[in-house]
Length: 180
Image (cartoon, rainbow, N blue to C red; front, side):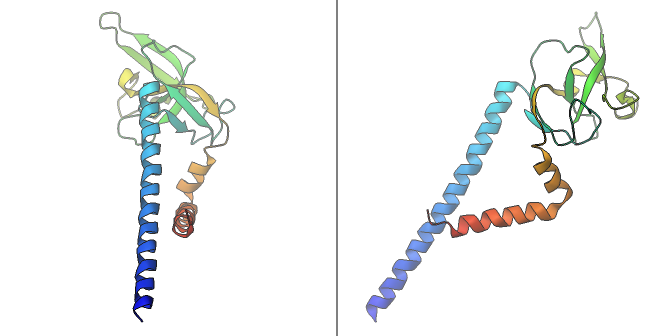
């Protein structure tokens, strides 16, 4: 009977090693993703180098679900550029086109007015209460490229959380049941 107990202990230790290996592998994947994100943040100069278009306000140029690649540099922002900006008091960034730039010659500060291509009016109604212009610190980046429709995965998981939980469960099951 001693060999049965030894065999069970051997199997248990293999399972524990297997589980620990899976946990370490998952940790390495998450760490790698964070390193890539931080690297992109550094290279592009944007706090969020990739964003998803969440509304139809920029159609026909960008459609809901498109992924935009952003870059931020020291060049002055010009009329016609597509920028992504944060408004005080709102968590979700907005993707719109610059329609006016006002530069204060005495301080060198710029003020920016934006508008969605598919909107009738400028964005002043979207800005914080009493704010008429965006300033440089509101701008997260300029659109330098895009992938059409790829962002729908994010939109679906945000709007229908059941898909997010199913995906997480499936990935967890895959990790638990994989042999290597």
